[in-house]
Length: 269
Image 1: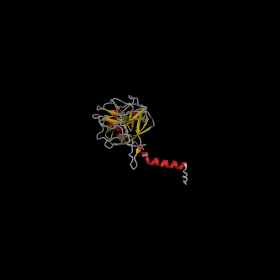
Image 2: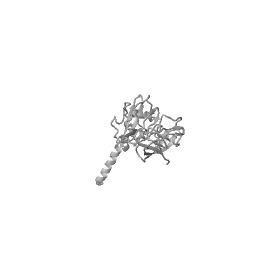
Image 3: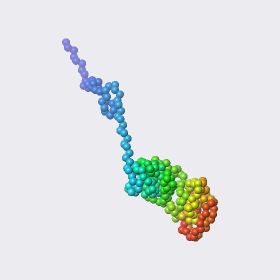
Image 4: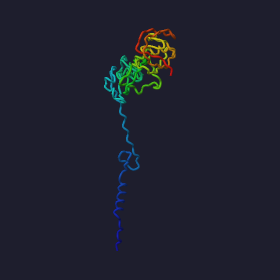
């Protein structure tokens, strides 16, 4: 007498078939991106793609953000390359430069490379400033300027402490920043220390000076700083005077003058 075959459910059959298929198939590692890996083999991770190389656009030394038509792209960063050349193009500002300044000459001023070697740079487009202070560094002298619509800077350059008053040149005047007519406004600057006072920077008046007088030279004349030490000074723009009396003080001689449109004085803060 034959024994009846045991009943096996369709679910049990499916389970047995699935287990057999697993035993006969090679393992697939999720971390291998779907690659087939033999049992017991350690999956090899995908090799990361190399970082894209920066492309530096070659510039002429006369190139500016305005001539390149990038001055309005605020916050954008551009990569440029300057060939060896001559850093004799005009630049306005220190650390932050007007958008009509030579990019390559500004990069030399900022200390990124020399004119003889040239080099690569990153440039960030910024909004305009109320005024720009010129300075002499790295064999490049930049000029002061007043309000300008757009600016740029080099993110990798060492920037002075923005909480400190901007350092100005010894021949800087309120007029060179276009602030000479802003009656009642106060401005704080830093005069750099110098071994010898440049007497060709002329001043007119005593205690109250014409707005085309050199701020730092007037500060020495007024007894606020010395040339050897330099230091911070605060000026206030005041109305013009009918006449200005010169005088010899602290090794500085100021001149007399007649009526003038506006003036400045030094204030303590």
